[in-house]
Length: 395
Image (cartoon, rainbow, N blue to C red; front, side, top):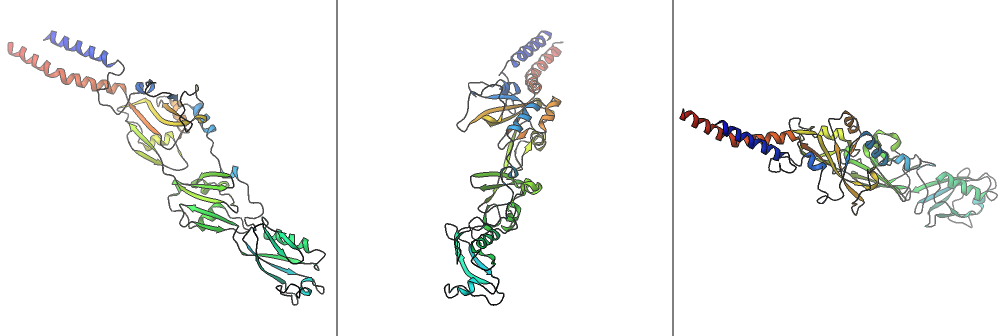
């Protein structure tokens, strides 16, 4: 029996030596590739793969390169009021003159459409629509270009044109129909609409309120502002919390509220394997680990936590020049996280998680060893028991 036991022990030692050889544990149950298999990935099967350790320096560099645009930095403040005169607007003009000499009262027989003033009442020029070239016609002032002006500026311009003709004229320009000073609001709002602007200078949240508010959770929405050739998108939560982001809107702006259900996926021996949604403003690696329930400390390899991602070429300080770039200018990269290093935990508090990231936690090598020993034990125990029984009978 002693010789048989020795033989079995030799078999276990031989098996353990085979187990330690790379790739020889593939027959054992596992949640995915081991840390060694990821770190030493076959360059033929995954060409151009970059593996980078997550550190504080790397995190700072990524954050500085990926600095997000803000409304406050891209767009100007409200200058002369949010309302401007534009083609299609309908204006009416009221003119007061100092008696007794009154130009417009004496000209009624020439301009029949103008109502003469009586006493201190003004002369009212009938409503007229601003032409496609941005002009209106005022008697004795001729064609006046008013597009792009405020009502007050338009009144001042007409006053200058009538100087020396009318007797100390006072001008009031009224906007009877606002067509051009509008903001278009579309997307995840209660009702898409054109919001007419006033001299008040409306802000982003004002026009969203005029559209009936949003239909989805605030944390899942992004506000995109298009102004001319500039386009910028900011999480709605940021606009609400930061007054600087709640900027003034301008005529012609297009405000689009977008629903962005961002998510990352956890696999391996994390305590929760699932696709997990997160807010439009983003989350960090530390938050992602917490939302996945952390790693399973009974079976997880604390040095084998990885993030699989396609990263833009200019988003990362590459240790060496990437050898493979996809048609959309991205590089396959694996970020390696060592949770046994306290410095990594500081980096994890700022390292950004992106949409469609894959967070993978590898199984610890010792777990594979225990599984293998259990298999060997299940094979040898019946034989040892049988040998022991034979010896007992022979005695």
